[in-house]
Image (cartoon, rainbow, N blue to C red; front, side):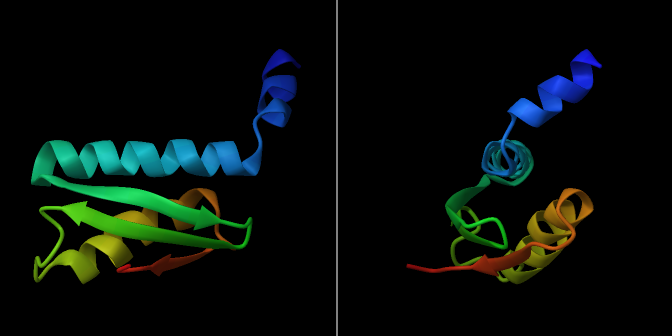
Length: 85
């Protein structure tokens, strides 16, 4: 019951921010890149890749595979959009 109440106190926004931070930490540690949460409205997540991801020919795969793939595991109805500016 305590876990159920704890989960209810964390908003969807907070959970998404934490998830993006974890994804970014992984990408930074292993590849020198980063992921920044630009905006999240509950249905649409906008992120910006940074660090070594900028100009990398594999950045589209990172966005779709790691970022979108991980987000979809926890938030299957959220659309992930990469932004450049």
